[in-house]
Amino acid sequence: MTLPPSPLRLRLDKQALVSNWSWLKGQGGAAACGAAIKANGYGTDAAGVLSHLAEAGCRDFFVATWAEALALLPLAEAVSLSVLHGVRDEDMAVVRQAGVRPVLNSVAQVRRWMESGGGPCDVMVDTGINRLGLGPEEAASGLLDGLEIRTLMSHLACADEEHPLNATQLDRFSVLKTKVPAGRYSLANSAGICLGPSYAFDLTRPGLALYGGIPRAEARAHIRQVAYPEAQVLQRKTVPAGASIGYNATLTAGHDMEVAILNVGYADGYLRGFSNKGRMLTSDGSPLPVVGRVSMDLLIVDVSTAPETREGDWLCLDYSLEEASALSGLSQYELLTGLGARFERYWK
Image 1 (tube, one colour):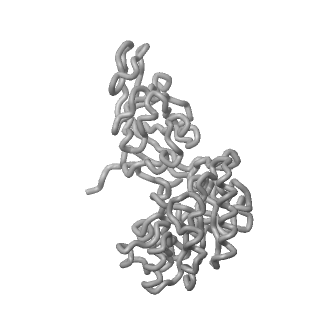
Image 2 (cartoon, helix red, strand yellow; image 1 turned 180 degrees about the horizontal axis):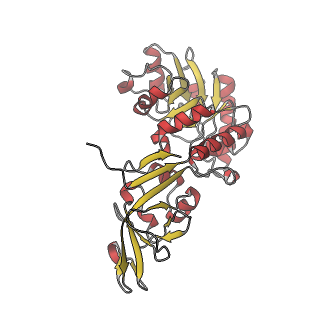
Image 3 (tube, one colour; image 1 turned 45 degrees about the horizontal axis):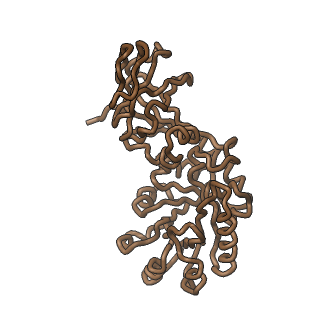
């Protein structure tokens, strides 16, 4: 049976994606520029992101899990995939996939990889975030001797702000570079790229900024929005003056109000932080305020200024990430990765 089209769409801008990657690459100087495409390309479309960026010249892609890597394997013949969460016992049956490397994060993972025959791998060293990664002392202890390390990497904890830990992590990683032989060295994420060329080393690994997120003020004039959530109008109705709108009656109409009910809600990632705050946009960019609480699957919008808006029309969520983050109290990462599976994704 052929399913009807979804009443939810996520329009994705290919040119904006490639433009963002190209700018980030330029900021890294001679360093190669990879792409973090974990969590379905930060909630967009990992397969499409890989294809479009590979066409633009990107050759290094990073996912979180082996399931993510295997789903992308048919598209990855000419590029490399690295699995950031390393290799568990449960992963060993599938780790010998062409072009896929584990990022080894612990002593146990290093030993597991070596005991299974070794081969090309990446290694993560924790220089201050206290998340995944070997300690610097472990990495320099001789534990890694004999490993074929393609990329030695670390991850910045505070690159999106002015913080002394940035320089501390840079110094620690620079020392490690002199002690641990590897094909390449990689430290900078999206925000780290904006800290300057000293953070770039041989390979940068942007994520958020690829998809329209603003990691630091330096990027604001250069990063373009990529994801545009769109929802279809299910009904238009008049709410009389004095009547309440939505769950818990958080808003009362001060006048007769024309509203549209849209097929989108917090189950799709448009969370309750947008209640009585968010906006939709008409096709010409005119703003329409969200009224009442965001429901699980439905959203109510004041369309009194848009008499042409009717059942079946499409409206776009005002989803410029930096502004939407400030409005809702959600991080830019949450806004992107929370976009649900009910969105029909398409590239323009």
